[in-house]
Image (tube, rainbow, N blue to C red; front, side, top):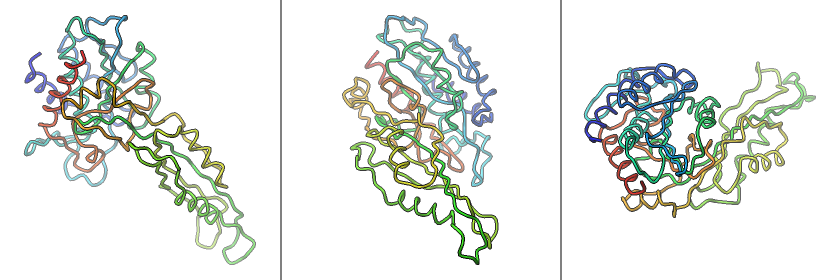
Amino acid sequence: MNHPLLYHSAIELLKELIKTPSFSGEEEETAKLIISWLDRFNIEWYRDKNNIWAFNKHFDPNKPTILLNSHHDTVKPNKGYTNNPFDAKEVDGKLFGLGSNDAGGCLVSLMALFAHFYNHNNLKYNLILAATAEEESSSVNGLKSALQFLPSINFAVVGEPTQMNLAIAEKGLLVVDGYASGISGHAAHENTLNAIYNAMDDINWIRSFQFPKVSDILGKVKMSVTQINAGVQHNVVPADCHFVIDIRVNECYTNNEVFEVLNVNTKSTLIPRSLHLNSSHIAVEHPFVQAGIQLGRLTYGSPTSSDQVHLNCPSVKLGPGDSTRSHSANEFIYLKEIEEGIDIYIKLFNKIL
């Protein structure tokens, strides 16, 4: 298919996606835009909730299958915006707008890739495109839900902004609520047990402890206490203190293993919000990774989590844009990044298909 046509149609779709609010869990209208785009290219699609997927025209169940996945939900705009987050404004080669970089540019580039190969016959692999919802909230109604409708996946490309370099490993995410208890009483008296002090003992341990296994790709497990709440007035010692631990887990540990270490070494009651958002890793010898290296793409370990956590097959995170712009005020993506992204995607798949 004509590359300029694909690029132009991808940009037009991205602009419409930016103009259409799609906060995580509220993606009904962007789902309609994606469906309309697929209809324009005569691509048969399927839908459940706000997840849309499609199979290449000559899908063969006897062949291995590659999943192309990215998300069309966004976070809510932060207070630092000076632009209208839904304007889709072009300035000096940049396209501004909420979700432009994370992950609209990746999604439309993968859609262009899929459209390019959709009608091809005699491919070595099947292709499945999945534009999914609720990635930003790690909800069960996103990719995790859509996977039940898909056949077995042998390999996946997850579209996230990586500057078109290959993230061959990704840190897992474990969020834990800690509840320290004490005995409430008047601050002037001695017969109290301060829940804040008890929480501080555990927080100090969390701050100083280092997990011994350090990954060559992802580095160390990183624990950060990011929220704390206790007390109602200055003269009352609180009986309860709640704090939250954000943990980024390397591929040397499962989330369960990390949680057990925390649980044994702290006195607070710890409750994990989820244990399934584990780290991921793919061998550098994988044919797709090798194809990327041959095209001059770099490999690295990503500190951020994505829908890779829901996959039980080898996968890479790869897409146009820069992760450091994600969730930032006045988010943008360079139009050139999308053009180059589509080109690199097609060149990569030409090597393996």
